[in-house]
Length: 276
Image (tube, rainbow, N blue to C red; front, side):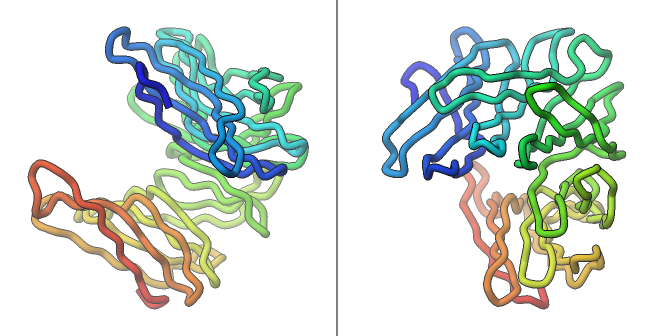
């Protein structure tokens, strides 16, 4: 995307008009600044808009769109005591329509880690780090401001819409909440989950087992009961970082291994049946 900066797309979404929108993060080796930005392309890859903002610790981690189709990015911005979570709406022509910050100047460090469309507003999740511990939160955000709805004992990683409300993934497990932030169902992973997906009869997520530190896939029912759990591990280190549901009720998980290579990683893929 740039010759002088290493810019990485961190998330993407399809806009109502068919264009693709990506959040960007990166840094320069020479200066040490971090870049955040928005990239909008046509379906054929033609760049429509690319905007970059430079700050000491700014990053755009996640992206969605508001009810009117405007891209909305979440991440963090600022530096030092001004480090804060940030969420901003940017038109496809690159114009910033509005921006809000979470916790600027507070004792803790905040970041926005997930956003999801919620009608005319956006549902955002994030975490607050204070005294080396992290807690999570969920909030609604629109042009008028921020309204926090609920909090979690561990950091919140992502949020997505579901037919039965919203699914929030935290460092402990997944939580189903309604539009007011009320937790309806929650399940404990027994380790640290990295990503979650829906299946034909529930949820499936991948992460690391708290006892063995091996990669694990866990499938639950829609009401949070674990259906099956599968783990793998090698002689050195393996990780599962992504998962999608497949038509037969199972899941396809992807990750990497260093069990047989000390210097480089090899991508791995594992398809699990609907019984693990």
